[in-house]
Length: 114
Length: 117
Image 1: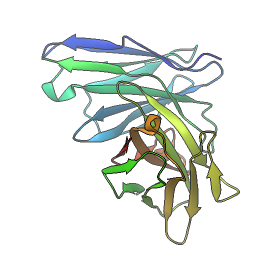
Image 2: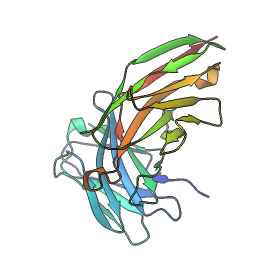
Image 3: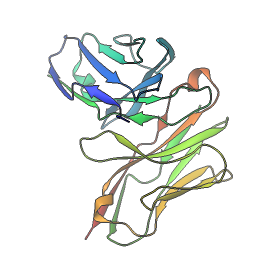
Image 4: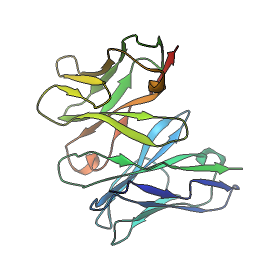
């Protein structure tokens, strides 16, 4: 079974631009969660989508948004990029059952904002 | 609110020595606990998990962790480490309160394990 895939793996953008990252979950998984990883703040939860609906959201500004498609693939968008948005963005997929289950992570997208 | 604390930011050990990476959690609801490992420039790989049942959980590569409710701990141990175990290790927890718990792992700050020859 193929793992979680993320595209692109690397991105370089300039301040003020916007960016879209993509995540394809493991087949059969309906939940996708997104995380931001930085040296200073560690791993922080951005949001979670299940069946095209955002079920949970972390404490990030509105510039960070996401969506999920009917095939469970998910995208996250960051508008008006700031230098501090430079990070590794990880997505994780799971079945999304009411009880917590295991999340499986993709390789991440490394975003650099210049 | 749930929080996860990893007590050591770096742990250096020699090859074939035992190691313990410490993790404490705090929560007012039932928790589900995980250990993930991250190699340089890669995503997170699941090492082991505690969802319910036996408090001692094992992974296929020799690591084990014990869920201790009274001490609110979930320390990771390995009796004999290899050079290839050098990586960053993350302890994470998830509550089951629905709503604010859906799909949300709360991570510790990570422990860098360096195995020296």
